[in-house]
Length: 122
Image (tube, rainbow, N blue to C red; front, side):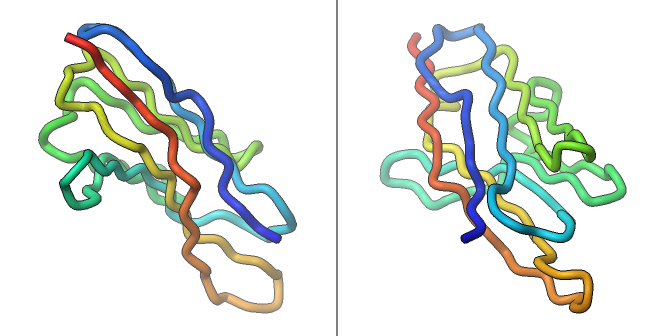
């Protein structure tokens, strides 16, 4: 069974840094676009950053200049480097990816990770 496995969340003081990682587990053929989303208590899930298979990135205005999304193609892993963290960055962060599960089908399946908590104290 294919899953997205996240790691790297935790508690950090304002101004600190964290790095999140996410990779698929199970049998897949390839990974297309990947991204990070977050959901704070009482709020809707929102986009944080995405990266295409070609490496094109997109960021929410609120994290531009502070967060960097990158990927290791050999490991099928996406990272989110978060610097200058603010209390308003506190949320559950979710990994998202479009996966191809077989070489004989171009269909992409969208997966979500289980979420990892990031808490920034003031």
